[in-house]
Image 1 (tube, rainbow, N blue to C red):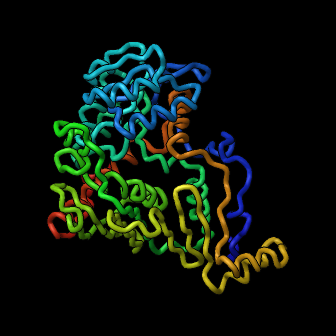
Image 2: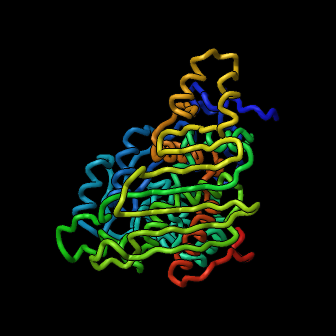
Image 3: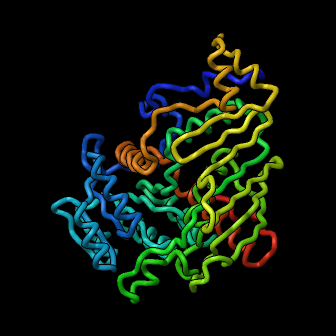
Length: 401
């Protein structure tokens, strides 16, 4: 490949939603779809908190998904979710009732992390297609157990790392893999917020049910709830899993009885000497969410819905001359230092659900599947363990999926 950075690779226009552009994203699985491409998929949501209800609202804009069941143990959350469900939807307080509902083709699991393993295994036994929210598994044993069972599962299992479905992120990965930013040397990832991360609780009896993310019995904390998306992305780009991790964190700002950390910083080693840092804060939101992919020719800075390439200094003039574009490009780069990645894309959560529909209808395996979900889960678990033990944690051969 030419050493010149190709401006056309970055200023991609046109709809990436066109299926022809993504023929390489999926591979055929052993799934045996229960519905045809023209049929509606009846789905039930298990766990109708903020995320579960939010996805239910997104489903209203996807004609081939019909929300026919909602399940939660908190009455007001269940009632609220039923408002966005189909008029013929049923409300349940026991997830096993959802799995027994013969009208349903699929279930979406959006419960606290500690419940994913049992519910997902039971959903496989019930022969339902599964969309399991991230992080997929609470610990290593659960992750490996879910992969093992899913290997014999003849339905779709998609993990809810929605950025894995983003057409923008897919384009960025394509740019990186084609060598346009040169050799990747590192990643700098952050997801910072300024707030206590606490949900309002109308009755003290619901504290641990509503604010489960703050309790170790149910949650992997910031690394599981936020950083896992970015860990999944780095695994995707490198086509690898980390070899080891070190890190630090603590409960240093919000002294409110929480058990999971209010700040974390970890560094993963990846094959080839690549280092990936992940920072998650709750007391400073400067620059919020971003991923920097560091190459020896350029850096890509990724936001939730935008991305830009920042060439190394010696390549800026070269980029200004690419494609014979006169001074406009060069002058613009002098002012901003960046070339945008332009591609049409839907909201990542909506796109992930649309991809789930496609997988169920065609039998194609999701790109965010049980194995990618397991790899992200194991990485999260090791990162939390390195902070808790203050010892480097290594990826063992028996973790391979």
